[in-house]
Length: 325
Image 1 (cartoon, rainbow, N blue to C red):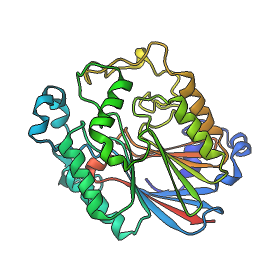
Image 2: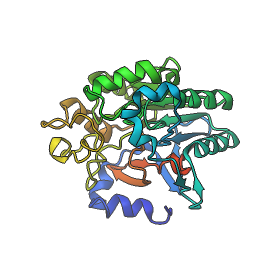
Image 3: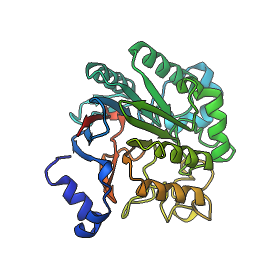
């Protein structure tokens, strides 16, 4: 992704915005941003000192051991999905564990202030995979936060609602990765910026998550939001499904393949739609970072950039720099 003309092109043409009209509603205290490849820069006067973070999503680690044997009827498809990958830049053969370690090496070299693990780090809730990630992060010495993606807690074909299965496997398997943070929402404050991560791994937002997000906005500091599933952007498919008006049973094409509960007939809850509106209008929200689609993209909505990263299973990550304006 090249920088030249990128902001103008994507904010005015691909989203169908009228430039003069959009210009009136862009919030000045969001600062500005730039993107070059997988490096993102946010410029904001409220940033006290320059710092960087590194965001990883969609590693899809498939490590398992004999503890996972009773669950192989549920893990079989995803255990085979990412055994061999191609590097997102070179096309050379690679695999998820190697890509994860290489990304951590880059984080250490760049002396980042935080590593953000934003969902689908594992392909199913394998004890061996969770332990491996915990050991890698501990050995790296890097501070980090974690929120789950839809695959992190999903055993395909296991009975139960999406909400109940997420709760079950967060408690039984994923808990070590949270480092005593709340599993559905957490925040880090670094040099005048609030880094907020919210679990939207089955496309919906709960009332307590909306309230938490509003509380962070009320602190009147620059906020960067990180979610696994991208928020709805005009023209995007339902994979950008958090707040998508067509999300629901009629548009759910993968529930048979993934052997899971179908999305509801009524579509999104009012809370999820309210969250989406809150994000778009927030004056001090400087950006949204997401994963899930495995393809890097940029959408600009009301001056707000949403950047989706390529999959870490192919070596990709986002390095985000925060720079005093």
